[in-house]
Length: 94
Image (tube, rainbow, N blue to C red):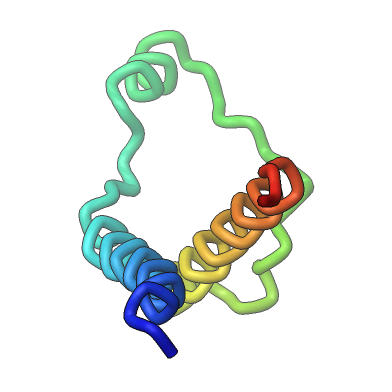
């Protein structure tokens, strides 16, 4: 296999790994507290937070950091695969 052909396989793997590491690092920085707008609505306007009936497709996994990482990785890989498929379907072939 030529060097150029092996680079075609390495680049997507590197991109996915960078995305996964970014989600793991940045996921820990996310705040569970409401932002300023939500806080002012809840405290001053006495607006209650709406209750949703849909818990999400990953609700059976529970809550926690590991579940956040797993769902983040699945989401990243899914979006990258959809983008790749869309690119392959719309690109011209030589």
